[in-house]
Length: 506
Image (cartoon, rainbow, N blue to C red; front, side, top):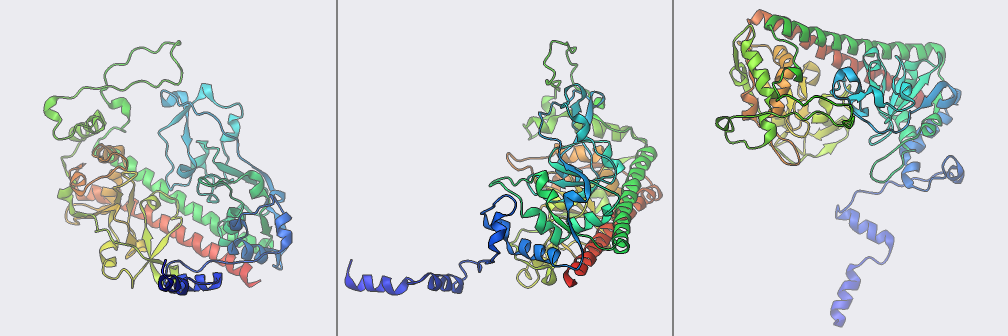
């Protein structure tokens, strides 16, 4: 190496670690590191953790807010009746719903309308199977994957066999369950819960981690206010679900449609079941299709006769059937663009496909209006839009209310704009939520790794066209239901923010 070249390299390389950071930060190579310090005695508390995330600034700030507050502090384990999860087990699914219990995973239990098409075999349940069922007014919290998300159990959830990936928190009469839920859902509670997560690829929590969370005990009168508001939140959600149930019942009744399930599908006859067969073997569903019906699709899933049966039943029903494109003003997908996110204060809320099914949108991000100014207008959604997930999990449906007007939404959400002269957005939503709509959507899926759906395929969904007054009667229930849902989310956010301010001020 020449002397001149060596001297040039020496001049370009920072000589100290401080100079190296300054050079990298000046060139926007990395974001500034988050640095925090903690008391040495914290290292000897709990599980003797040496990972930096355990002592992150959020967890440290939250712990100080709680421990230095004017309110008495108790651990969650001391103020609840029990905190547990039932343990892992091998799942064996039943051949039909009569032979099993409907099963919910952790993510399904946190959905706005929890449903299941999987049934655990009653004669192959774990020895502690009773612990997998829950009771009303327990708090359920995710303990695997994305940890710390919670929900208060309702009668709707109590009929399901619940996954062991949800920790059960059984409250006593005091502190009130609504107050505990609000605290655990606040940023303070979330920081204290998630700091204990462990695992490299998939994060986990254990019952003793949740039991050790410190909880400030507010006066009973203040707890009662928060508790009553949270109860009102869940009452609104239950009203919303009841309205959707009523709309679904009315739709089937008025259109003369039977409730659809796979027992209506003409699969080829199955050989009789024999006791010597392995119990975990599910029946093989086989069918034939005509060569003339193959078209340009050679994937077997496209020709499974579920959607075909649904369409045949629609044509036999009370009213004429038309294509969705004939009832819609527009069906479109916005263009893709590089998203720049900012904090809530400076951005536009941005919906992802996973948010549509959730009881409330978790991990919501916010688009920068300034950085995305050339594209943001194209991704905004308007009140009355019907959103359908078209990538990944296909067919999740949401009606956009005034609450979401001018929010941003991912290009993975297909937009359906109803033609108000021919139909109502609420009616379209009600139909697309039924198996008649869902099975038509999923039959058109393409893609090897990630499932996809196109606008053209969505335009060709068959849908009954009853008189407008019937559509309105069904649709009004759906619109009201989604308004209740968003009112509940807004009230929950306000209640949690109120609790956070009380604790932060003190």
